[in-house]
Structure formats: structure tokens, C-alpha cells
Image 1 (cartoon, rainbow, N blue to C red):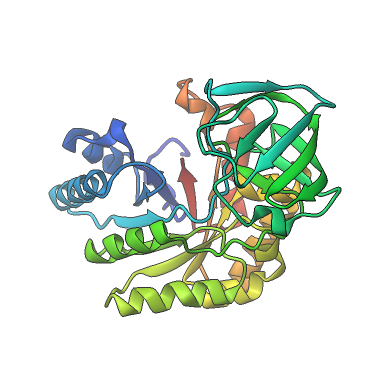
Image 2 (cartoon, rainbow, N blue to C red):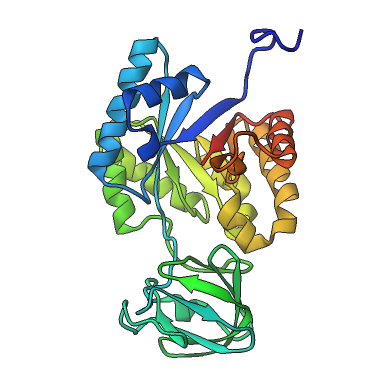
Length: 319
């Protein structure tokens, strides 16, 4: 009967993101008991001490249950963001002008302009480029670039608050995959003997090889999971897969760059290439996301997870 727990052996693994809600031995033990195979440490949030405590909890719970649980350290990568507004947030109206200013004070943002943390952004842009802010909720069209200032027209407006992300539609930003913060996080991950490093925003195999050289320099043995979230990564998918120990379809930033409508077919293409090249593949972002607030997933989310399993992915990730 389908209701019998052991009727089928589950081959698709579950990767769960850790956070404050899982910072007890009981919570960690329960995660493993209900089926988590690997845990994710999100280096975009928390301190090294926070992550060290979580690693110790995972290992204690796994030992208690006589289970092998993988640990993945997810590097933040070059996430390009706006700076801060004096009032914390603003509202952008369609048709209005808004300026991204690389020379502006990082706390002086107004309804007309805001600073940016990626100082060479103006060099990557030309008139008519489309910029997507806050995971695509706000759309700007570049009108002109004047030195450090990117002068834009608001196409799709809305509320914009501090430190929201910036993506360029179609890709083409020159930011390297590894930042100074990533280097420190990578050293910490190697020191803690995590099993895998998730490399954010790689553009090509060169970015992956650079990360591997740094791991080897630190005498580490971590595998590399390359997160596919740039247009350039999709274009270079075979080279990235071959240079990596596995890939993750990171649908959030990827969808912003290529458009939501393109994601399903690109996801299937990446899965197919990973299968052909005999490398593990993980599907991530918004899997069962409604369960943050609801006790059961939506039917669409059930179909999303089921389709990933039917496509023979190795792992699904809960964010």
C-alpha cells in the first residue's frame, strides 16, 4: 500500500536551511528524524560563532541518531544592493526619475536617489538597460550614465527599502563570484570541515576553479556546488557542471535575470545536462514556501516538488 512508510525507498534527498528556529538539540534532532539529509548554513546571515554552534548541534544530533548528515556552507557571493534611505524606505512612482549613485553617502538615500554597494555598476550599463530591484518587484530603465550616476526612469514602481538587491535583466554584470567576505567565510567553512561549499553567482568554470584553488590552499576537502543564477552561467552550463561537484538551480536570482516564464524550461535543461554529465543537481528557492505560514503546501507546490523528483533531481532544498 502507498501508505506504508517503507514501501518505496526515497532517493531524492532533502536539504534544509538552518536558522534561529533550529538552534536547539531537540529541533535539530527532529529535523533529522523527519527526513533531512543535509543542512545549509546561509553565510548571508549570522556570525561565524552562530554557524559554528549550528554545525556542532548537527553533528551531535547526527551522532545521537547514528545518521550521516551533510553540511553545506552557502557563500553570499556578489549580491549587488542599494544602500540605505534616510527614512528606511521610499515609494517609487512609474514615470518618475530615480538615480543610483555610486558616489553617494551610503545612508543618505532619498526618493530621488540612493547609493549602491557595487561601485563599478555604472561601467556595466548603457542606455535602455533594464534593472530589476527587490527580486524583480521594481523595474527601472536606464536613461543615461553620467560618471558614478545611473539615471533611470521608473517603469514598475512600488515600495523600496534599505539594502534591496539589484539585477540586470539579461545578465552582463562584471562582478566576480568571490568577494572578500566570501574568502573569510570559505576559510571558516574549511576550518569547520563542512562537506560542501555552495558557490554563488559563478559565471564560468574559471570562477569554480578559483574557488577550488582557494579550498586546496586552505588544505580543505569541501566539494563545490555551483549555484546557477546568472545568464552567463546558463550559457556556460556544461563547463560549470564539469568543473563542479554538483550544481544547484537557484531559481530566485535566476528568474529575475531571465524572466519567470523561462525558468521551467531552463531548469529542465540544467537537470538534463547534469544527468548527462553525471553530476548531482539540487533544485532550490520557494519549494513549499507557503508552509512558512500554513500547515500544508499548496497544490502547485506539491506539483513543483513532484516534478523535480520525476525529473530525477538528487535533492530539493527548503529555504
